[in-house]
Length: 237
Image 1: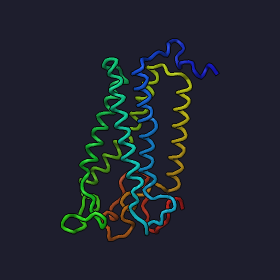
Image 2: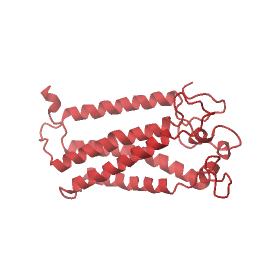
Image 3: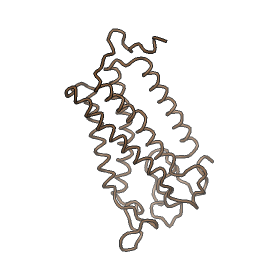
Image 4: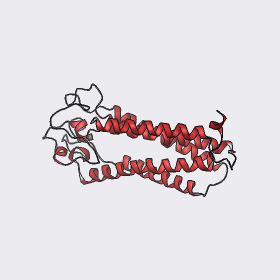
């Protein structure tokens, strides 16, 4: 079993400073595990298993799971960044990609804060009307959804590449490569299974249902592989 603990590149030693080691652990936890899970929850659990949709609407489980998970990602990213700066400012390709990840994360946070109003029956406007950026699917909300989703998936890919480069730079032992590879394979298989079972329900319909009285149901859903129902089937059916 000694081969599992051997570095990926036998020509180099696996010797990293304590701060760099904890930087790596923080970033793997944040971007290798928590960020993908937060995306998976947001994509596939807007309607929960066993939820009597569309009689039961607007489950908050996916929303809380997504923002709490990504808040932890943001916190761990800040901690990891502080740890690595203890050993001097990094300037290699891994660092440049890492800075790009941080810039995109900040953009995502800004988009989330200024995503607009919700509206609809459960969150009416101050004047009592149902008007809201989300309920009406205003141009601002449409832009937000396209950019937020596109940048989110791009972030996962960029962060994954950055993690792999970091592991290579640290000459991580083989067991680390095996664990992260098996985790990503398992995640990909679960993603595909949930997608094929129809769990990627349109956010708008998950919140307000499929009724034609809701203005957002008169436009196409935003994003790839999103399920929109007019026959009230449960996800997975």
